[in-house]
Length: 463
Ligand code: SAH
Image (cartoon, rainbow, N blue to C red; front, side, top):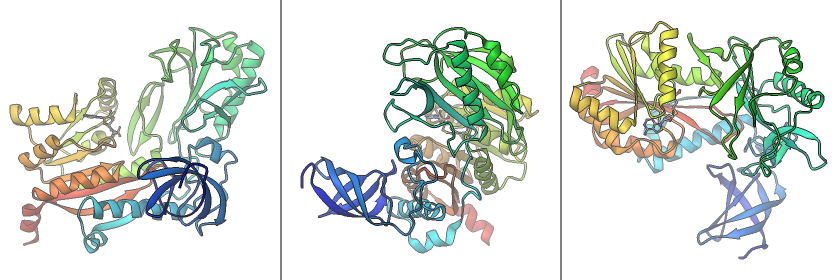
């Protein structure tokens, strides 16, 4: 086998990046745009020692789960890796992925996993779920000013003002911005020359409040004929905040630090459950509020709080889980590495009149052990929601040493989840229930929440 060879593949699995995986002579090939169940013809693009990359040439026999992708630019854009897969099949794929990782990496057996599994939480309507979109502005080949999305891993803009994962109103906003550029003479920023004004349009919508924020990321400090833009935008129902973000650096980073107000407030508000949040252009906020509420609802259920517990929320971000749990607990302590997120968490706690939540900026694997050993702080329930690399062993050891009764593990990577559960299981904890939650329909991202509790405690309760 060598580059440019044409091969036949049966796609049996999918990678973390959303490529189909098929095997030939024990050799795995990654093929973009192929889904599980497809039989395809592919051209080898690159060979590595144990695997290779191939390009989809022709579908010989489509997967029974294959559907026509509703978005006309789905393949070019690459943001939705599995739009060509029926939604119920997406759910099966995600659930199997969690199940297989828990079995293979976690060492749990099938019957046990079946017995502890709860129904996967998918979306009733898996479209238009995102509350945030960042559209780069640039020029098309024929010189028109366009906006859309970067094609996977490149800086080529695929023209698209109507992403099916975002709100319908995005298109109206982008049309208004493009019209204003035309009449004001504002130019699209050019990454190669560093010239031009408008870099990105950031749009956020409060799903509960219906408030809308538009933030123009500009290479400069002001825009020409700003009133023409704001006059138009402020007619859109729900428009609450129009701002500029200053980013004059030659960088891939989308947002600069400085926000300049143009019209209305500099933030919008939205809710997760009954907790209110202020969201500025720079704030982190979960992009799928509907599923986030379900995911954190599960975490709350698993935490089984009675009002007397101390809860630690590790990797707490802006404190979404902490605040969600605070009213049911005696005390909540959140730890997060990004100081600005901790400031947001504190502000949001105050905004909601929550006084039993404290937040610490720092590494979870450092702050948590230190607070335990040096200050004698304890936890009845520990919630972790780590990034993809999972938890540091030192952190898991601290959970064990302090003897927390329950651990609620919220995970965006079920491979590292399985690894960490195994560690806790070897040290006296057992999985009681687990549940997959779909936070990102049409993508391969897979969320999962697991309840573990101490074996001795569980046994005592059973007597
Ligand atoms: N539950 C949070 C999101 C968690 S995402 C929310 O709803 O907002 C994971 C978070 O872990 C990110 O905010 C990231 O900044 C943070 N993080 C990454 N490494 C960390 C570490 N070593 N210690 C603490 N936080 C960390």
